[in-house]
Amino acid sequence: MKPNILVLLILFLGLPLAGAQEIRTWTSASGKTLEAALADVKGDQVVLRSPAGELIQIRLNQLSSADQIFVGSHRTGRPPVAPGAGAAAPEAPASPVLEELFGRRLEGVKGRRMSTGELAGKKIGIYFTASWCPPCRAFTPELVKVYNQLQADHKPFEVVLVTSDKDERSMDKYMKDYDMPWVAVPFGDKRIDLLKKKFSVSGIPKLVVIDDAGQILSANARGEVTAQGVQAFDRW
Image 1: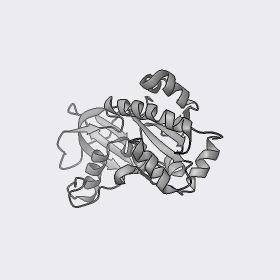
Image 2 (image 1 turned 90 degrees about the vertical axis):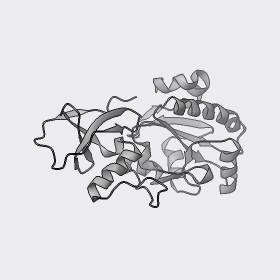
Image 3 (image 1 turned 30 degrees about the horizontal axis):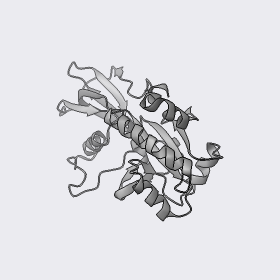
């Protein structure tokens, strides 16, 4: 994991806000936790106060979705609303780099949707694949197994599928038939061709792993997943 995913910068910022917040558990996008109170919000920077009184600054999009909702309620003065409790949760803010690559929203099976902002702090596998491709159908179960294990281990990893199918029905059926737990760039999105060009895709399947700043961590992650399984994650 990159060392700057959850860098805690101790700041000497003066007095705490009036009406001090209670200590609560905060969770980063990568799964790390911290006990602290909300001290201030400055743009996209969240300032927390530890039980020892230290002030800690972290970017909003490096927090979990639930914590981003909590911070949003602090800004508006309204109590946080859990998803499904009568109001839609606000989307996590996406970085310009990730939004340029994938757009603002990604889609999965069974109506699953994800804000691109939820990719913050994660290693991202861009999976170029299609239902009509025999090598893709052979590799996909391997990737599903590795993905599910990394999720069970609370590793900050996500897969974004980029299809080469000719119609949306084939893409959806492929994802459902192989129980793909990840998300995809929506069928027909112009970014599909742009991603293939950017990452020099001349054949499929191809798995490219990037960080949340768009830097390539592995251009041959398919071979690494096949050879190393979940251990490939720590080498990216």
